[in-house]
Length: 361
Image 1 (cartoon, helix red, strand yellow):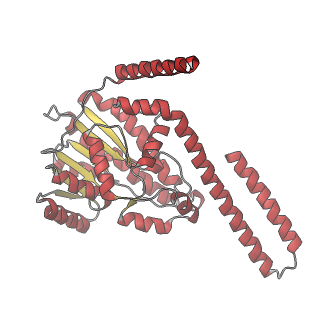
Image 2 (cartoon, one colour):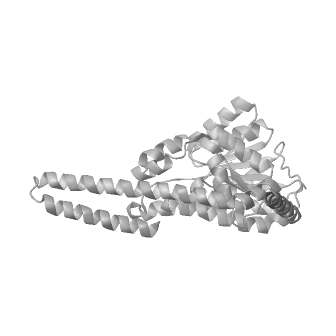
Image 3 (cartoon, one colour):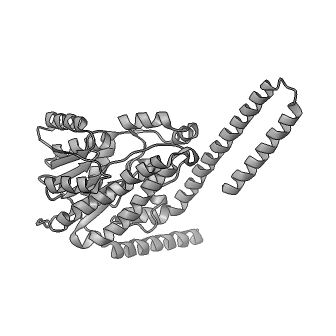
């Protein structure tokens, strides 16, 4: 009992020391980024998460501007926001891939207090089957489009007269925290946003601009419905382990994260585990979350390894089943004349496949 009590005391002392060190390092202070009477500029604002964010910001008294490519959808979004909130919004038809068009829209909209880079495109496919034009499309919209927006808005944000903190929010994806089968190009475009956000925060902190990086899970939007129809079968099997959430829920989490000045903003429990598991050297403004990251790093790594094991097991099983079906079809065509040879080839394929996945895992 004495040894146990000593161990407990030691743990408490270590906990207190770490807590005090984190408090000293982080210097916690109450951060509030106001929304009311401030200019909130949202891209991808005509549908999905962007439209939900526009509704929410307008309902809280913000002056909202939305940018998207489709003029008709922009007008529909404007009408729906007017109807639900009684507030007007400014609309800007532009393609984020065009830096000149983005700059014109930002200049016309006026200085931005809260920039929400929400645009995103997704073409799920294995890399070998993916056209390079599709890869370029995703990188140009998801990554380069964010560069174009921030480059255009940053001078005005730095020169704003208000002393209140401003915000740059970048909507990434949980596929920007972990790679998933069939998301090769998409994950690459979203992983890049993290490096952008971490470096950008260091560059703008002196101007009282806080960066937030949001990681939504699969979100129930019209675009997502279309995308799921294009997914490889294996992608659907792996993604089925995590359900979808409503766009309104993601919008609430996002806006709350922005207002509190959080750097990493998860949108569900899975996202919270991913945020802890992938914290790395990213900024952290909450002592409580910093403690979670320190003490939960080991357990979340274990959970992550279990999840990865399940994914690779699903991949291996899927390929084995498809090889088996192919062997059966070949056997049927040959009317069973080479059964022994087919059996041998099938087992060799399984052996090679097993060896391959053992190496990968």
